[in-house]
Length: 138
Image: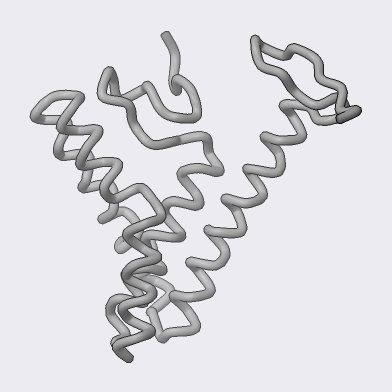
């Protein structure tokens, strides 16, 4: 009670909170996930020079787009959400295994950078349609 709202882009937003402030907070959160992934990689003996090629392997999930936007969204989203790396991290920690922790580190760093750059989970309509909005021109 007593909260005041304004209409911004068709949505009620509390007075004093701007879309820019929320966007900046979300970007900082994603950069923190990127940093955590890199720190996890290094702290667990991952060779720094191998992080970049390993990082790029995550984008092999885009191969699903050869089967159309629906299949592409499924394969891309399977590799670009936080559930997989967090499960790998838990498995590796619980089981005392290093490789799942390193895999989780790669996924976390990759997802953090992607989201910080504005690339979100894909919608089945088009590669450019994401949960963060449409990317690219046109």
